[in-house]
Structures are given as structure tokens and as C-alpha cells.
Image (cartoon, rainbow, N blue to C red):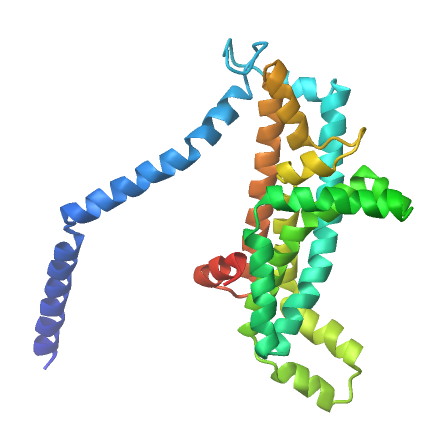
Length: 302
């Protein structure tokens, strides 16, 4: 009896090894598709790799690589114009992320917990905000800020930081709404109903149950809103005022006189910050129990 079992196990093992050997044989189509995928990735990331390499250029101009060094990064610490532009961008991105996260979280919770025909209309409006060209938003925001600040006398809208923060938060609010809604749609509402049955106040239920369930998506939306606000070039170019020039607009003005290596250095630093933010988003969602597919779906707002 034991010999028969042993022979059966050996045959199954040989069959599995043979099957794995057959599966290890890859067709030319698989190899071609993998090669094509690598080429696409190189096509997408080659410009980024170039700008990172040239951020270590010690030459006077960005396009002329002299030697490897950290002079460009040291220049950031000694050039007030660069420091001011980076400071304005970071402050604007932080305020914009707070605005977008607050509005987007409330909108996402409302769409997930109070479904109906209105949700599809609201999603259509958010989609319209997402696909509207930035130049249209910029042209619309400029006279609106002028009307509020000068004609109505609301001095707050004459401040450059306020203008940049509001302008940057438009698209980011739609993104946060998608993410929070995608997170809560997959969560059971029984916990919130149970909290109400236990005589918890609506505010307590919202704070300790609903917001707790949506917290990973809220944090993900905040970090994505922050990174998106760092790169709102067209809107920033229209609504900025003197003394509050953000980094993207500074780069555009620097093109006229020739790009210097410190532009690539700051861009590299911002790229690293963006990658760190995205990594934190993935870690938070992973610790919340999401799979890789769920993380991608949540970050895409699907």
C-alpha cells in the first residue's frame, strides 16, 4: 500500500515538473510583448532620467554637461529667487491639498452613502472639471478673482497665495472625491447602521465609523492633491501676483534666459517628494488591507 502511494507521489511530482517545464517555455509573442513594454517604459521615463542626471551638472547652463557635482543643489540654498519660488509652491500645495481633501472627502462620502440619480449628475460635473483644459480654467479664474478682489473689495482674493491655492484645488477636489467614493463603495454600511442603533450621535458615527473607514483614502487623496498642486503651471501663470511666483512659473521665465542646473536640481527634489508621497499612499492602503489591484483602483478613483 505504501509502495503504491510512493509511486503515485513520484509520478505526480514528475508530471508537475514536466508541466512546469512546459510552462517555462515562453513563446516569441510573450518575449516581444515584454520587450515592447520595456521600450514603452524607456520612452516614458527617458526625459525624467535625463533631467535627474543633468541636475548633477556643474556647468553654467543645463544643456551643457561639464562634470559631475552637487553645485546645483548647493545653489538652491544661496539663491533667494529659487527659495521663494519653492516656498510659494510648497505653501500653495499644502493649502490646496487641505481644501481639496476637505471638500472631496465630504463629496465622496455623500456619493457613496446616499446613492441616487443625483450621483451620476454630480460625477458628470466632476468629470467635466477633470477634463476641462487648464487654459480654460485659467482664463475663467483670472477675471473672477479680479471681480471679487477689486470690484467687490474682498481683499483676500488679491493675495497671490489665496489665488494659487483656490486655482490648484479645483482639479484636486475632483480627484479626492473619486478616491474617497471608490473606497467607501466597497465598504459595508452596516457598521454605521449599528452605530446609529446603539444611539450614537450622527457626528460621533461620522467621526468614529465613516471617517475611520475612509481614512486611508482621505490620506491618499491628500497626498495626491499635494503632488498635483505642485505642477499646476497654466493656472498659476494666470492667477499669480507679484511676489508670489510659484516654481513652475519661475521655470517658464527661466527658459528665456537659458535653463541653469539648479532648475533640474529643484525638479529632481520635487520628483523625489512626489515618489515618496505615492509610496506613502501605497503603504497606507496596503496596511489597510487592500490588495495591489485595490490600491491601483483606489488611486485611480475607480
